[in-house]
Image: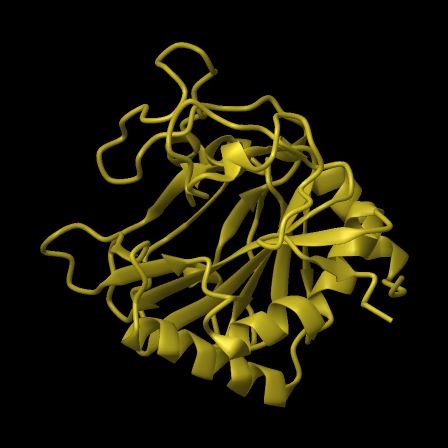
Length: 269
């Protein structure tokens, strides 16, 4: 297992989020840029524009491209990212869950609402996301994570633009706190980031992101990983991202042993 600064692992256990500098080297950053642009040029059926009509910018995203975009597949499986994920989760084995490309053009006003990732998924157990920009990101345009919220509870997932309870029925989970009403009441982690830095955060950590009222763009490759204790948790609705037919191949509570979720740590001999 990769040796991380113990302060990072301690902070991750405590806060559910850390920023690790220089995770990708310059060649890998260029590889990520190529992969992101291929995703933008050849969007999948899961691609969507997540900004409202009339936004002066544009927020676009796409999911699960590692199998058909070689640059993303290589980084997701063979960069330092899986080893860091293993060290932070203190797990002997890590599976790739999925990738997510997020691009906010300069001038985008659309905020990514506060949310947890875990309730949108068809998996129970620990997981970690690595949020990796390929552009310089000022603090005012960075992902924001509420320290300590990875300890739970699960909170109601809603659609980002309409705010609908599309997944869990109304009233079955507690609502998210109104962070924007009193941000000083929360320990919000945000960072000035260089290309190739990465924010690692727990699937249950509450997070969001401002718009990007800057020149240029904020291109991000997010890679999501599962610990060895993760188990399949079929839902009675379409998850985000969806894995169509997975419930017919993996029973509830079974390990995530499927070609869609390859073991990426330890590396194959």
